[in-house]
Length: 424
Ligand code: RNT
Ligand code: ZN
Image (cartoon, rainbow, N blue to C red; front, top):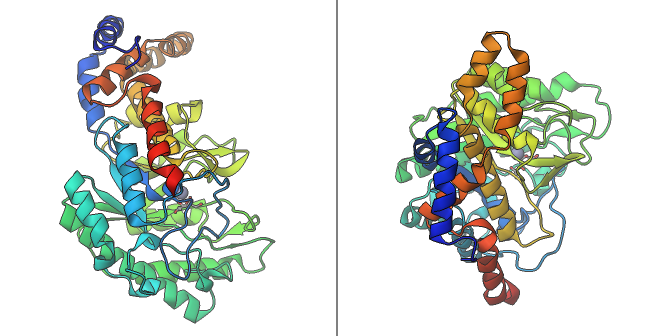
């Protein structure tokens, strides 16, 4: 602990912050209790640049890409779980992990993606049970010869389409079994890269195929206690600039009509679009939502999440809609140019900080000014709230949750890098 972050100084700063917030009617102790309930789903693919463990296929494709060659990338389940342990030990609270199908462990045996079974995730399950973390899941419809045409579930080639339908079906079966075994619903997110570099002549045709595939996939019903089906939209990807089959409207329409959870990825909209604004509009019609918390820089670049205006606005909107129990937070970024544990911890801590800022907001006061027509006061209060001492509350949370306070966690990451990552 650095000299500024002793238990005594943290508690003193918290005591002061508590008074400041109390003046606005906010009980910081109660907020910290609420924050403990917020789980973030940490994506495994930040740990290995979306490579996965497949014997013959794998790797990112379909318009997504991790750049950078920082040493220490996890190359096996053991390494990835060890890295996860390190990251989770530096993040306050209890969280979830998010796996892709390519993270199956098959002991060197080639198992096709449409043949995957629960047993191929046994090590993950046992580990998750031991650590008390839930698992979320994703079919992997990219990085595979059957995805080489750029189409998967939306393909017009029946052999290709049927292969991916089978893959997503087995993934649902696995995900539901994971949810059942772990006693917490597994959120399974379907994202397909399908699209075209240039202007298509038959936009409708591929969308019909995708709809048909999803209908077939969702024919099997699972208890929502075990499995939550989600579907992610996308605007464009590298080489998929002109058209995506699973566009926002496609996903919104399909999701609302078929009771499938809509997934909004922060990088999957025009950069001037305000994703926070989409929440209330969607939640009026849908019982829940999945967020892929990411950071687009000029494009869907999947940079590590930081505490920026977009992230805070998103959390504030969840708070203002009183929807924390309806909105699943999942991270989705991949940066191979920096220490990958630093990436995970920075992104997750930023997401939690944004949620804390939102929970600390005296929302009632803002709404009262708005309803009274005092828009000037609303604006002024919003500005004043920005400089309330949330950092002191955050530090207290880290102290209580027994994780390093402030930047102290970087020392742990450095030690782990020296001892473990450098030897890979
Ligand atoms: C791609 C989507 C998708 C992926 C992961 C790896 O644009 O955002 O969520 O990033 O499934
Ligand atoms: Zn995503």
